Picture 1 (cartoon, rainbow, N blue to C red):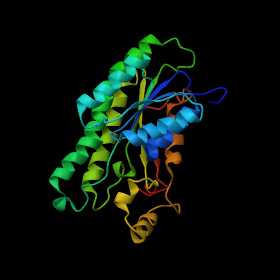
Picture 2: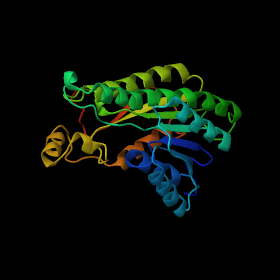
Picture 3: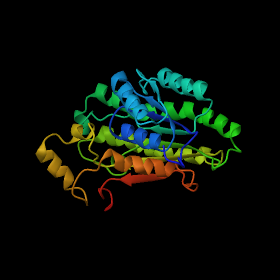
Length: 268
């Protein structure tokens, strides 16, 4: 923890925290003094992440495994457990998501489509639905806290595929456009209450998810040709933006969707 940790005394909940962008963001928040809640389906990577964070001398994260964000009861229970343990919820990074259901629209497997939408769309909806009331309680309880900036923060993981279309990815694109729309609408509903809701829109980031899109060197080469830059980003690129959005110094952002995509959407 730094001498003047930006997120000291803040409780930060992260879904999809066991790998990739979620893990990198958890590590970044930990370095800035946050009390983390790591949520995901698989217990082993979450426990490994928590152990590594604790070993570095940061606050020990609360791990909530076997939680599928597509199941409202499960994510609601995880959020409730967070508030019951810490008495507050300051920041949520709704990062859990999946790829799949690929192919031209008429060829998409309907069951895969439904699962994709449940995770990527319902998961964000259910998460925010149960986070927002507890954030309102947090604001009421700690409204005079120094440096609070009067705001709690929610950041949703959208995608460059929530900004432009991609052939062969109609289902995934639809799910991420939904996240963008949900983010903007919820921001309008809760900004004046003190909850700033925004989204990040990553492009090709070196995570397990990207390999579902670009399998093999030829696919990677074709994807790289859509960028202004020359290589994939890394999870830490997204983590830095998430922390910036959530900083108490960032007081005038609501309903924004920040692209971190190597220029992939710059020409649109």
